[in-house]
Amino acid sequence: MRFIALGSADVTGGFSSWRMWWMLAKNDVARRYRRSRIGQLWLTLSMAVTVLGMGLVYSLLFNTPIASYLPHVGVGLVLWGMIAGIMTESCLSFTENENIMRQIALPRFTYLLRTIARNLLVFGHNLIILPIVFVACGTAINANMFLFLPGLLLVLANLAWVGYLLAILSARFRDIPQIIQSLIQVAFFVSPVVFKPTQLPPNHPVLILNPFASMLDVMREPLLGNLPSLTAYAILLGLLIGGWLVSLAFAGKYSHRVVYWL
Amino acid sequence: MAHIVLDKASVELAVYNSRGRALKHELFRRTVGGGVEDRRDSSVQVVKALREVSFEARDGDRIGLIGGNGAGKTTLLRVLSRVYPPTGGRAEIDGRVSSLIDLSMGMDTDATGYENIIMRGVMLGLHRKQAEAITQDVEEFSELGEFLDLPIRTYSSGMMLRLAFAVSTAVQPDILILDEVIGVGDAAFAERAELRMHNMITNANIVFLASHSDETIKRFCNRTLWMKSGSLMADGTPEEVLAAYHADAHHAAGE
Image 1 (spheres, rainbow over the protein chains, first blue to last red):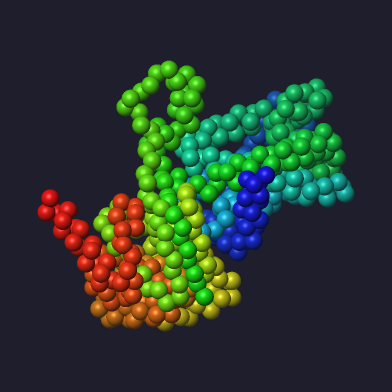
Image 2: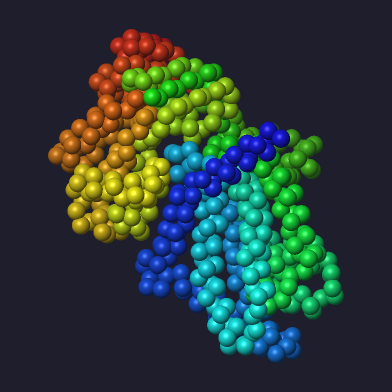
């Protein structure tokens, strides 16, 4: 219990130093604009090319009409970009802020929020692709779209505890970022980004045991005008509660040592 | 008001080599490696950087910190700036601390001088408005003029130092932490920098200054701590502590 309290204090402290992480996150994105006119939009452009390319090829491979496949893969890739970005970059949350952490005392969670905020800003850039895809494919959107926001928050709250754990572990074990990078690569292929969940039998283990499938579900389905499955919400809520308890206890016990590991 | 109490504060640093840093190796060691003791493998070394240091500091204390290299001065400064939580004992630090150990902390070389002033201000704990308010002071003091509109990667090292110094010293802390008195720039600037530093030291409630120069210690401090291999050897007036320190150094050299 004591450790959970200590961990919670670090997290709430992180939120209250919002000036710091918000400024740093904005600066991270601004850097990409500094020496090129369209900056971050280059990456958005490359995302758009990927969406188009995969949409064309896989709609043929899967023998589905492009108008129904392109929105699926488009939304999937943009969302996956955010999930994968937060997972891999949160491993570096502490190590990349080493020189600041050695000089000023701030809650450790501040640096994690920098990583998350930066990825959200990038995600905002990539979202531009979606309305274009929707209009081009004549995708019908409806009031279910409003469920996207709660879905996004649920996913972020889950990624935050995972990232917090990964950041602490990566400060101690420097090979974790590489391990995570490889795992994310595998996760991409077993998650319904490229393929549709409906191509698998209902409640197939890949959709139930892989939390990334649930994350995609609660964010993607609302955008495509469908209702996410209740199972996905249940899985994410369960992970949220269990994960945060573990993560807070772990952080309470170890996060003050992070600065000694840098 | 600022107040500091250290009660048997200790810091043990675990220093890992590249094997101790790898999860792969750690897992191997814990599972199959158990029976095979590799004698050469000391993947973790524990360094006692600070051993049960106790003292109290109150308003008006100008504390000099002396000791050889590796005596624990920097570790102590980091504990005092709340960056290192002691691994043993207690450290209570009341008051706003500003540490000038690394002047160029958090500077983004691709951002302009102005942007860096704001960023650094926010890192020092200012609100955006307050950070904008220090801009004028930094402008005047650094004399960088229109260079402040350029990315700082275009600066010479002297200009970079001027900017870093000006921003770091723009906010007056309660507790000031210094690693050597900073001398920067050409003669004219160095003179103004010294004056500014002097004002900052005068206006802070408590100052810690680590230095290898007796002159500096005698000039700025009214109290001195002598550190040796992580322990606090002496705490007193600069004259008596410096004398004890030199006697010890002399003795060690004579042997």
